[in-house]
Image (cartoon, rainbow, N blue to C red; front, side, top):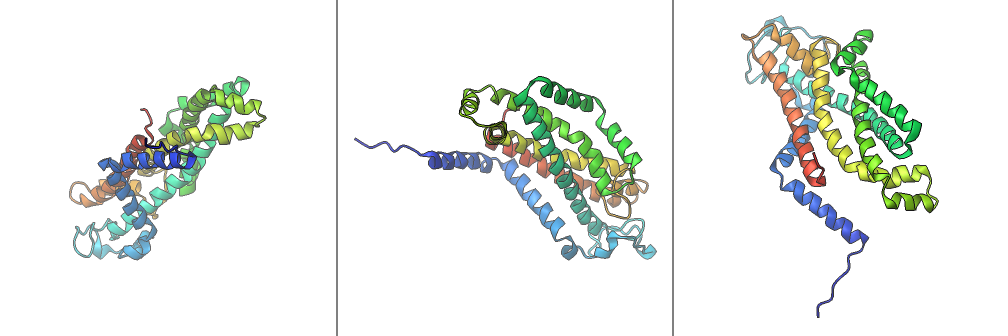
Length: 293
């Protein structure tokens, strides 16, 4: 009679990890999204070495090269100041990634902590945090961001502040729903009776159950942050020129449509490219973690 081998905790973790990776790797869209984001990160990190005209990210003017169409010297053509659009687009991707890191690096931890606290403690803590979240969610996001940006100087830091003031709310509501459900489980009560403190229960027992939904939500939100930041710059409330930003590049080029179409199409395609990568990766992570819609 064959012996049945019992799996220990490490074997079960490896088996579970392998199944998640298998689901992810079998999703073509997720693999494509990962490759897209890897290429974006590579271009953003090594932008000074890849771009042919790195000085064109500043206030450079060359009237002899204005509105040149795409060719071997200028792959994406030139803009109204004679600057290379390919160079400015690559550096614009760097600005977009910095915006994502800044906004989500603050809003995700803040929203997660507030959601955990509200879901676990309940009572007046839950009412206060839920009420604050509902008030913030009641405000139109774009109007709120425009109001904040209008009061501050149009810089990357202030654009981050304007978006972060809104973005933590969605994460707080999501984590609140998960933590509220997990807090009622029997093993949480057992940990409490065993003498575990609130911090241990929040961050060692409840938070690991939220990692999957946080990962999926954060990845999908990255695409929205980029679009939101590009919208602010398009309207003149984002990154201050001459710093290259994809939204402001589209705004500058639209006045020359349709004759110089490349001035809008190339930075616009860059926005589409990076947001598509984040969305495809988010769908892949959702399948990998088996997170319900």
